[in-house]
Length: 511
Image (cartoon, rainbow, N blue to C red; front, side, top):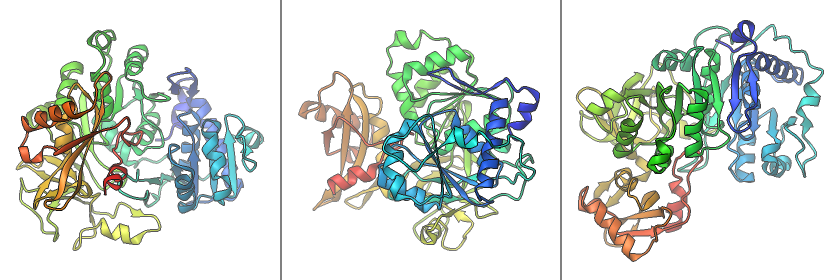
């Protein structure tokens, strides 16, 4: 479905609301604005398969640009505005964007990349971009463009870039579907709509940056099915609770670090808000420590739903609260694709054995743009329709998947495999720990040793005494050989705004 369907029946209904300002985008305005931009881009020469790059903060216009691309057969590449100028410019160049649309909210980055990209169409909305001269004013350019929907509306797609936690971002380019935008067949609508009960009564809270795959795709799915999206400009733990109560939020999506921040609010603050409207709280994007998830279920009730997937859309698993309580730590069973666990040589492993997680699909779901070698590296050596994102894990006898870590992060100490995630999960809820990363550091005798890098909680003082306390804390809960041999303290850990640790930066620091 396409939001234009709902614009015809209820044009004044909010398609999206900005949490901070209260500004609203109605379905009628979304239909008109996206049609106007689609016509403008077509007049500028963009055709099916071309790319529109979007560099902006969380604003309502994200949806206008997204749906304009979707109804034009175009790819949309939403660029992480927290990147440096060279990184952002690289993505705009690499995706081959024919149009670049920026917001004044990220004016510094927009100006910095201006001379390092060669997109022929450049638009800026929300005000001027100081220091830039080549962006035309979005509203002025579209003012004379018709809002009549194009006669031909081939379905487009997003072409997003991996977060680059283990290397340079990779463009994930799906095959464009051979359908019109108003025809059924969207994977997210077909899978997640019935799974989570998205419909016209849905009020969906989106606390994360919209350039990330899940917030962008899920909020668009909610709009396609007639619901309303409440968008936070940026995540704040107490403000999230305020919004659930204020808007009677029915659905939401989170990452585990958000759970941790909300759980660390004072008890009287957590108890202050009415969260009874919340029917489904989805989480994904990063592994959730067992203790954190248990605490959230104790607080919010059995409304937590987890899925495991990737921007590459190689496959999906699902698990609800009841299933998880029977199998703590699992990310569920396959809902799209068939799970295959394989060893280093590609041999399939038995239940309970840890190996690389592949999903078997009857189609090749994606390719890495401009990088056939990386595409091939993601494929099984004998079965090209088995693909992986590099995660390690195992399945139990009933087919439930348990993740252990990413292959790139595994520590090999004295010939023994140690999975940092297990140690991070152990330390995550320690009262003196605000954030933690565990990495392997070079050691002449063992090859690698386990090091924890900790951001202390407010009021906690890092130092030798706290180091020994944390090491002992881990030794009491998991095997002693997995415990850190040392702990460093820092004021900041490199995370993407969606919660993923950028361990590459830490490992480079200690290499």
